[in-house]
Image (cartoon, rainbow, N blue to C red; front, side, top):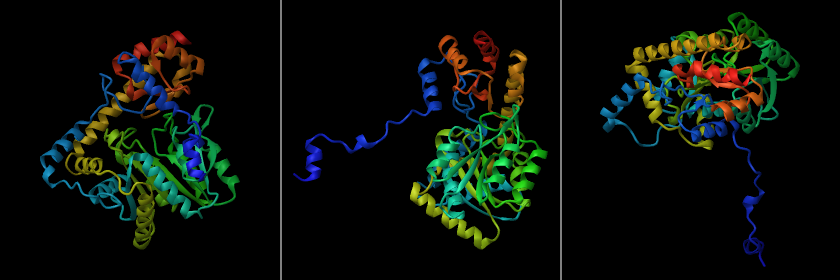
Length: 398
């Protein structure tokens, strides 16, 4: 009997060779929170929520969507260029580098995760494609390590915290010991999951050390405008450029344009010449063609419209978001024990609360508060009116 018939007759399934997957822990706890109903306190996924616990839609984005709807007859539903809509790429590049006149290759992507995946593959090609070390400071965003792994990089973890504060010591120590060209993944502000960022002096010292080594720095820029004004948040990119570091940037519109489900991002590379830019653009298109061809365009159109027509409103929206996140942090600090304060004196959406796994579990079971087991909390996802209630619940499991 032919082998394929034998397999069919005996009921064999090739799917049985697949490993039993573990659920993504963050999405699993978020699903539990969703299933538990609207009265729970949900600090899981990184979504900016309004006071009713629904994803906030920025006023500037509403204006842009209305504008696009009015001009729907001119919107192209055809396949886009592989590298994305030119207006989108141009406006986001301006957000990254300001008025600098330099050569920037870019490609639209399926969210910040897609941009990260594209840039990691480019980095691997640039460093020889075999056994490329990638330094990832930890704790890291939950998806950093998996995306680096699937890109085929050799992950080298480096401690990001020292005595509960952001530090470059672990990163520099690991970098000096590698002994070959490497990549470094570094977040640009509003660190996920800690909210604790390197200060200007630490950044300058890190750049000085990196200049002595053979490396490519990959800047993950997911929260532009959530710490300070967009231009101030982008300063690290300029510092890396000025230092002559080979620099890649991963940018996301999910948070700062509140279009999570439209999966809109940009991968960018700072090139040294127009010819080099064309080469990188071509390689970007080759990479994305092998992944998913071109990225979706409606989110790109929204971002381009916001930046071209409603930029002032967008900046006002971000300013309001920053002030609200700051107020929530202050409320948490005021209503939680001193042992929580250091972890809350950060920026952006996230902090890691000093809770044990049993305490996090008790919060879920006894108090209907849902957090990942590491104690990370999405501050922007908790309604301001429920912050004191949350603090009381935390106190009961201490």
